[in-house]
Image (cartoon, rainbow, N blue to C red; front, side, top):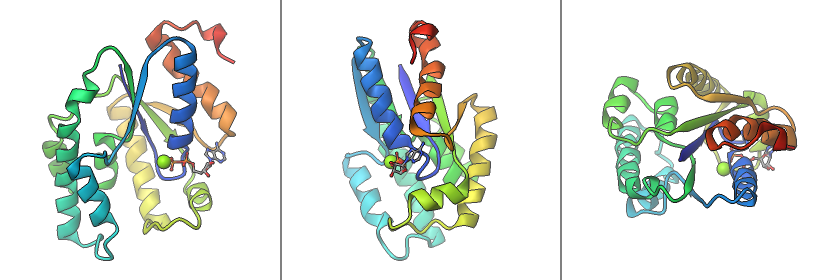
Length: 192
Ligand code: ADP
Ligand code: MG
C-alpha cells in the first residue's frame, strides 16, 4: 500500500508520518517512509536548486517541475514493494498544488504512481506561518493561500482524506488512524 501525506509546510506531515509509522509497526505491518524530493541524484539536485536566490524565476520553476517529475520516476520501484506499507511525504499532488501551468504539470506527471490513499493535512495559512517561523522559506501568505485552495480542489478530484490539521497533534493522529484503518482491516474500536 502506498500512502501519501500532503499539505503546506507546518501542516504536520513529518510529525504525523512518524506517529502513523510507529502505530502501524505496533500493529505488525512493515513500513518504509520516504520524502520528496528524495535522496536520488535528481532529488539532491532539486534541493540544491531550491536554495538558490533566483529559485523563483519562471524558467527555473519550470525546470524544477521537470526535475520533480524525474525524481518520482526514479523511485517507482520502491513504491511497488508489496511487502511493505510505503508512506511518502508528498507526491505528484504537491506538484499540482505548487507548480504551474497546471495542465503541463499534469502531463509531465502522467506516469507517476497513483497513491492508494492520500491524506491531506489542511492547515490555516496563518498557523503555517507561525509553525514554520524562523525557518528559511520564501513562501508568503498570499502564495500559501493559493496552494491551500489548490489542495482543497485537488482533494475532490483525487478523493483525498482531508484531515483538520489545526487540531492538537494527538487528535490529528487519531483522525489519521481512523482514515487508514479501513484500508488495512484494522478494527476502528482498537484506535485510541
Ligand atoms: P511539515 O512536515 O508538514 O512541515 P511538521 O511535522 O514538521 O510539519 O510540523 C511543523 C511544526 O509544527 C513542528 O514544530 C511541529 O512540532 C509542530 N506541529 C505539528 N503538528 C502540530 C499540531 N497539530 N499542533 C501544533 N503544532 C504542531
Ligand atoms: Mg516536514
